Length: 114
Length: 113
Image (cartoon, rainbow over all chains, first blue to last red; front, side):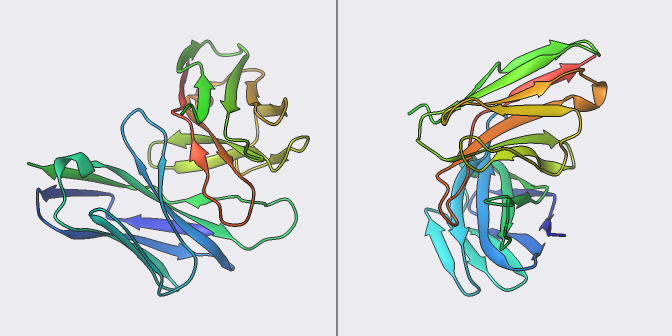
């Protein structure tokens, strides 16, 4: 069974204080790892897809990295508008009718204080 | 820029009532999904439709039914609502080729009394 665990559950930062969020996963064969951002009262918004160990993706102050067991979302010099819940999800290689299914972690609630 | 549209945004039901949650996407996506999101549980897949004309059970399908009405629309029905189905329901869609991300609507907040 595919499993995704995110840590910490909540993270409070001061503006400009860089940090990282962790996503540990267990999957039979990783087809893709996805990072989403979710604002209160909204649906998840896609950020990145990572496909293989060693891959990195960047967008503004965010950088996602991937190893064979975990992914990190690095936040450099965060601003208050980066406050949100960050979700990690994995898609496994599987045949039949499991097409495109994602397994999500519980998310990390990030709060950035000015 | 509509993307994935869900209706209604909020709903309160009494135990035993039935209801259909509507979802439509305008991105010409092939696959569509229904999730529920509960505190401490993350997003859990209820049902999905890999393509028009097909539907399959996800992780938590009991108490729900779905209909893929056409390529754009995918509805979720609660036949006899129970308090345990109080949740936020999200619809998502995906183009369908390998590793494409799912795109989500803004959810339906459902309370069952």
